[in-house]
Structure formats: C-alpha cells, structure tokens
Image 1 (cartoon, rainbow, N blue to C red):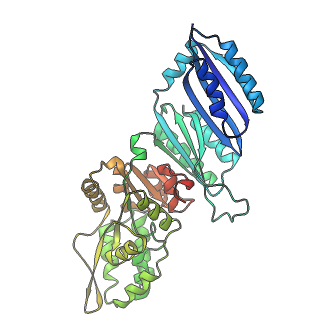
Image 2: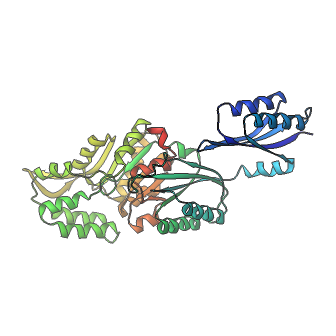
Image 3: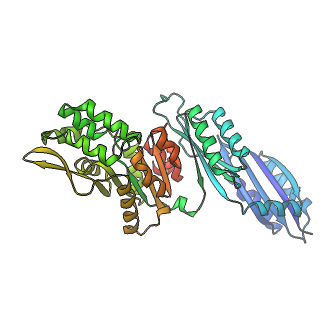
Length: 403
C-alpha cells in the first residue's frame, strides 16, 4: 500500500532547506506529487505532498525529516492523506482558472477581506496569492505609490457578469481597481498594445487645447464632453469642433505639442513593453501631428489618427482622409493584429471614451483607463486609481521584472 504524506515546514529562511529535506526523501525513492513554497519577510513556509513507495515504511522517513528540521531550527507538520482525498483533490485541478488582480495606492486588510469574500461567494477558490508590486516604502507619499496583489483562483463562477459587477461596486466603494481574467495561455502571450491618445496617453484633449488657442475653448469642450458621454455621434461632433478651428495659425501646433502632459506611468509602460518585444500603436480620433510627436517621444511603433488640413500656414477646419472614429479604431486594431500575425486574443486595447468601446470589446484584454462611467461599465477591465503602468500588473509583470 502506497502512503501519501503532506509535509509542512516553516521557520526562518536559510539556503539549503529544500535540498536537505528532498535529499532525505530521495533515499526512500519518494515521488513529489505537489510542492510549493513562499517566503514572506524572510520567513519560509513550504509544503510537499509526497508518495512513499510500497517497499518503504513512512515512519523512518518522518523520523529523519523531523530530525533534520530540528537541526535547521524549523517547525514541521505531517499529515497522512487518503487516496480518496487525493483523488478528490486531483479532480478539482481541471477546473477553470481565473486571475483576480487588486490594484491600489496602498493595499489594506479591508480590501483583501472584501475581494476574497466576493470571490468565494461566487464560487472561486483562491489557491495562490502573490504580490506583484515592489517593497512598500513606509514614508512614500500616497499619490506616488502603487501596490498590487494577484490572486490565482479556480472554479467556474455561476454568474460571471454578476461577479464582475460585484467587483465593480467594490472598486468604486474602496477606491481600488479589481480585474478578473480567465487564466489561459493568451494571458502571458499578448503582443500588441493599442492606445487611444487624448486623455489616455496624454492628460489632455488636444482639440480642446487647439480651441483655447483659437479662442473658442468653451464651445468646443462642451461638444467634446457630450461626445465622450456618448450623447453625440463622434463623427458629427468632430466635424462641428473642427469647423470652429478654422484660421488657427500652424505655429500654435508645435507649442501645444511641446506642452502636452504625458500621463503618469506612460513612459515606463511603453519602454517596458518595447523591451519585452511588444508592439505599440496609437489609434486616435485626434491628430497625426500630435500622434507622431508622441510616437517619437515615447518610442511607439504605429500611429493612426486624423490628418489636420493646413493651407498657407492656417488650419482649414477640415481633415483629409477617413475620420478615425470608434468603428475605424476597431478596424485598425484588426488590421494591425493581422499584420503582426496575431489573434485578437493577443491584443490589448486601452482607452477612455465612448469611441474606444468598439476596440476595447474585440481585444483579448480591453482596459478602460480613467474612463467615464458608461465606458467603465461596458469594458471588461478598468484602471482608475493608478497610472498607465498599472497595466503591467494586469499582464502579470512584477516590478522586479523590469527595474
């Protein structure tokens, strides 16, 4: 009769613990059925699920492991596992897996209590928790800090839409971002990230800045707001706003470009993505002039936006070519995926306005960034409390991967 044992070891972490314990098990030709360890603040917790072959007894194994643990100043617990209970555990392994990501400026016990309560209420069993963000500086100002904990869970939620809206309600109440994704092969193999430009990569709406320079600021920003809320058709609102810019001097464009405030975390996000071989694109209902400026500044691969017509040094109030609206953004995303030989599952889209929803909905990972409530409610994921580099956590990067 084979014996199955669960061995739990804990104590101050030191080099050589794993090799010392497994060397003993090796003498008894044990098979390792499961293994895991975590070190939190130099304290080691380790678990081994071990099968002892029939020709050996478990008791000498226990004695030697106990002796070695004592020598290393570690606590050890043993628990015999029945084959039936092992069988039940194995049958659970095939269940769907999900990743729940909690992002905030600071992680509190309340946030974790609430997130895990919701997860278990909807049938998710959390079996792994890890911190993706760097070590917390205790005196760092709160608006600069960022923290992230990732929960790996298994189970099939009875109602995924209800689970999402429970997390959404929680994120609003606690001022955090909570993402839930299926944990599949695509999650680690995304290769193209498409960004909206205005209010996403930059903390401004260029058309409003142009309007201020042309002295029609209030009229234009009213139209912009209505379009972002989804009350006005984008193409119509765009034409109306453009007409108001007629006669603006071309020299103003450069001044505005130089003063565009780049969103928190954008530079770090783009440089990290490039370093790891991701392609990046701007798909914008704004203007090529500013898109190309940002492309140079941040190192972005593709830019698709509207061509601002300039004649005799003056803006004409027209754009040439196809207007980049919501449908066009989605079409461009598809074309770029094809060009890069990727499935849509491997594409990430990031935007904040109603005209970003078509591309957010077809991308494998669609992220509403600091978005209007309508957009937030319709997108699968959203980030409102951190900068753009919070997206790295959703892909599964740890801070230490890209310092």
